[in-house]
Image 1 (cartoon, rainbow, N blue to C red):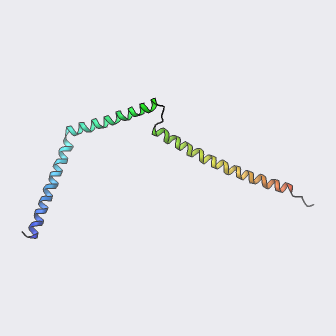
Image 2: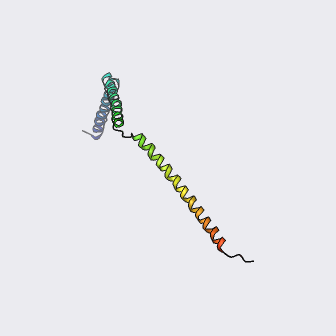
Image 3: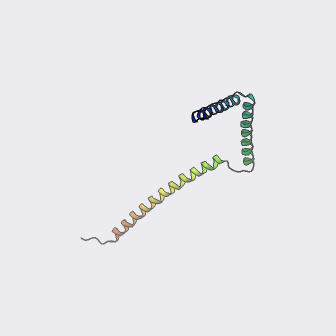
Length: 108
């Protein structure tokens, strides 16, 4: 068998394989059974999330969203505290400078 013939055979096998995969994908896409299974899976997921939220609420545990909101608020408070600390440091330096100036005898 020549290399040209081998390439043609490989191309033919590849083309048939691609066609078979395409036909299979189209059959899955058109399948009502698959559509129903996906709908049931998504419905079950929603129900599981609702049950999880109900259980966490019953145990008085926060949800992930609530924890994220709390984390954002804590970061905001932390930034504000840093700003207040910087302002207090500036005021303290200014008061110290005023005291030093007040202690110096004036020449006159």
